[in-house]
Length: 325
View 1 (cartoon, rainbow, N blue to C red):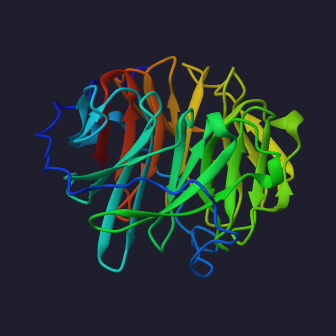
View 2: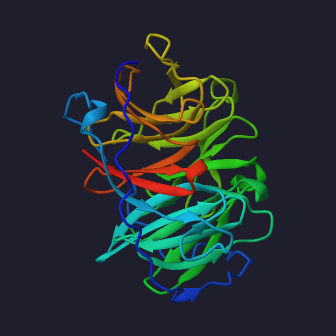
């Protein structure tokens, strides 16, 4: 579409030796172990209008990870999900490894801290971190979302949410403004709102409207954006989980065939990873094209930090790239 350029060369990757490795307790507690988490998404309506972000303004400022087989020290087999979180002066970046079956945890400077081994056949995908630094892991193979509290040197197991057994191959998870879970259940085409207190279903979308939702994102008003695989683009629901609209980039010079991940910035605009065309597109919430970053190898999940920097899981290159603007 006339706006292509390759990202700048990756910068040096930083590592430190592992300081702790968690062996999780796989018996969920009857309720989550700490009080209800603080809000996960700010409330209110964005005031900033859409602003174009041409490809040339993106700066690749950090590359995290590399190809490996150990499942630790930043060595990835199949990185898929990424989340950024910050609370009480601690910053964490978490990356799930789909094939290896764990989550590796880094600090805000991208120094490796430790890995969280998951149950067999978990096949972890999307991640989220709330403002208590609790990490949520969507486990496609076990039809659940597991929670772990992150500390500087270790992580502690909390709870498992499964929508009373209704989750089917969950692939994306976010935390809403009330601290409850929003989960993309790709196996049955539903986005669920689950109570943080016990995992019960509070609300859900119609499965006919979002086939194969791979990831979800929330804007400050609580609207839901589902990256729906198989040519379905981005499907939009309001805060009541009612279908609003969808777009596939049909009016763009280079449409969107394969939406994998989605994130919403402070202006209410969307970042959408396109695994088939190896790019991340920047667009308005209504589907107006604003720009893109090219040159990835099967990009998947996306995350934003408090400064608005974008993290992209570049799965085929076995790294996570951080960009600012």
